[in-house]
Amino acid sequence: MPSSAPGGDPNRFVRQLGNVMDLPFVLIGSIVIGGGIGYLLDSHFHTFPILSLVFGLLGFAGGMYELIRRLSSRRPGGNQNGH
Image (cartoon, rainbow, N blue to C red; front, side):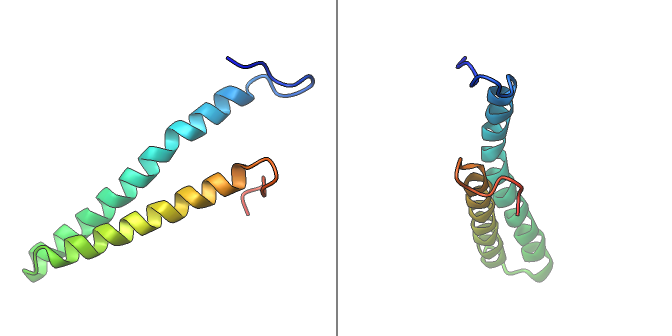
């Protein structure tokens, strides 16, 4: 476990590790939710697999957007306040 900088937060590494461990769930979760909504709409409108694919791709795009947004705000020179 790397040591923190003098005067820095000793729990910084643990927080960063937790944030990185969260990222795959964001991507997979958005794909599953998008595909699930598409599947439900497909079963209602009898259009399988069109809406499942469309909403799955929309979920993937949303997940990638969220990953990029989270990673760009964590860079040392990036915006650290989440805006």
